[in-house]
Image (cartoon, each protein chain N blue to C red):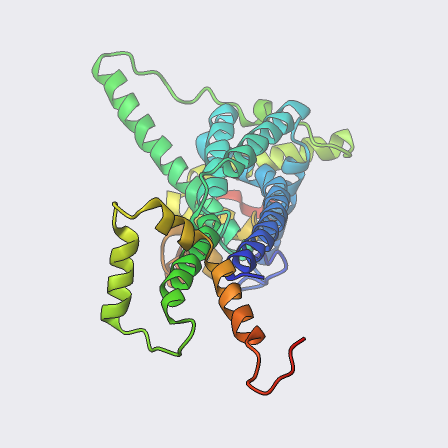
Length: 201
Length: 136
């Protein structure tokens, strides 16, 4: 068999292996996104107070992760995904501040207090009406307390508590050091305890 | 990376954090069907976009390797009969020949039949009778 034939045989087998590996990676990415998307949506929604906007940001983060970071180790997907998402949340807030200032300048600014977290809260599944009411009320209180936190403390708390990221993963997602994560998280917990009070003891 | 059971710094913080995680999970479980459908659509679009990414370098690598092997084969054709070390001037001259735009058509055909001519030479060597061999 000539050298050319051997090289083409090897390249064909390489292409088959590449296709098989790519399919497995796509399936793994699909499973990851299925698992993370619900939590990511709720985390974004707490920051944005708007489900439609949160859905758009989650989709943008999903697309960016799939296009740019699908080839990375799957262990890196969670912190990378939330890094992209948090960048989107910050950009959204910056645009909103600019928009509000422009509206106020032209005398068309409006109050931003018409969001009702209880009314907007989703219907939980598999709970008694009393439990549903308790959980929805508790979630509404928690959301309000979280939104009162500085942004970095809120990020650190939600990533650590809601997504379960460790300090290193949270640091990657937030783009800061592990020490900063611990500081933000500790301050967030203290502030929430002071705000939520005895209901959470 | 996910360490939902990782303990926090003090026991005093745990009830608050645990309760927060519980009601948060409850709110995720309670997402309505329409929201879940939109999430699913977004995920499928992202996966399709990722699957239609441009061809990456590792697909072209075998093609490049095959071209390199062909070039080396052509270069070494000049030294089939005797083990001649390929020096830079020889290789450069061979490449110059290959790159010559005025290469005659019959020369090109000969280059394409390298394997055949190599076999032919080898076969002729093997069939040359020894001086005292009885033929016939």
